[in-house]
Amino acid sequence: MVFKLMWGITGTGYVIKESIDLMKDLQDEFGEDIRITVMLSKEGAAVVKWYKQWNYLTETVKKVHIEQTPNIPFFAGALQIGNYDIFICCPVSANSVAKIVYGIADTLITNCVAQAIKGGVTAYIFPSDQDFEPITTTKPNGEPLVLKIRDIEIENINKLKKLEGIYVIKDFSDINKLILDKIKDKSQNP
Ligand SMILES: Cc1cc2nc3c(=O)[nH]c(=O)nc-3n(C[C@H](O)[C@H](O)[C@H](O)COP(=O)(O)O)c2cc1C
Image (cartoon, rainbow, N blue to C red; front, side, top):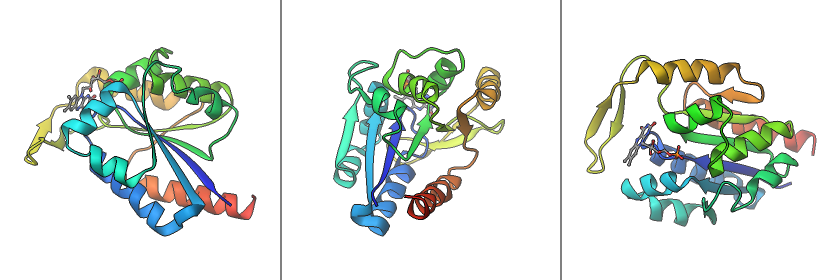
């Protein structure tokens, strides 16, 4: 059994390293039994590079693809027909959340979310800006950076939670269990 995970990354600095760490842990644990594909929005790629995590990402995951257009690379189709066992987007920028909430599908990730849901596939989304409390992220030099979350971002997260086909992940630490549960499901019902 090979478990196929599609992981979308958008342009936000929150939990990027933690996301790659998790991918690495999963690959260390499951080896050839897990196949991870990472797709990044254009800004996702820029931010991963900004945080100096590009080499870590590409050394960890073999299949890493950057958005050229909303349909290139054409993952929307593969997602829609259920070629992946789970579709996670983490972290998701306020920009992409706003687009998804208003039905805009003009970037690789927002398009994949829209098309996956149309095909009956759940999109698991971890928005970076989802608490009333300011979030602490990291400057490129490693120092902490505290960012206020605007009302519009909270409003959009609340709308996102009500959208069909979307599961909003509250805590980053929930992602590991979510994936492990899906792997267990697949191994019991291949
Ligand atoms: C270094 C860096 C960090 C960023 N961090 C965030 C963030 O924490 N949250 C956010 O919503 N946007 C953040 N942005 C802004 C987004 O990248 C920008 O809104 C972009 O348009 C998002 O495009 P995408 O949603 O297609 O990836 C950051 C940008 C840079 C350059």
